[in-house]
Length: 87
Image (cartoon, rainbow, N blue to C red; front, side):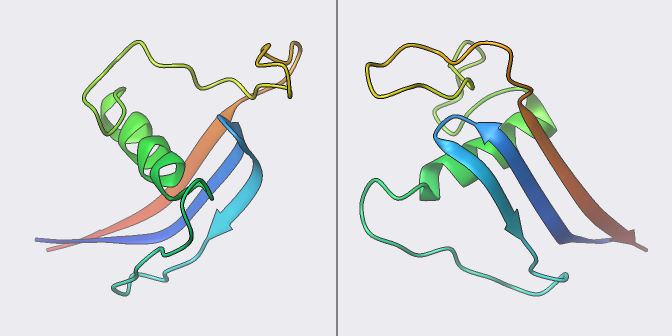
């Protein structure tokens, strides 16, 4: 069985307002400087699949925070993926 990630979309997930990742089922690497959202993308994907973050915690904050660290209210937080499964 082969499982391929085609698309991953984050909206208001932790510090990311809107992000779309399109590996189209190919191997891909997300790179960037420290504190630019790499772990947040990994947390979002793991949360979508398993309800946990990359540190294996179920009770972590997914809400977007303002500059003072307070959670924004009345915001939808979503993570969506298109995954292909081939036999």
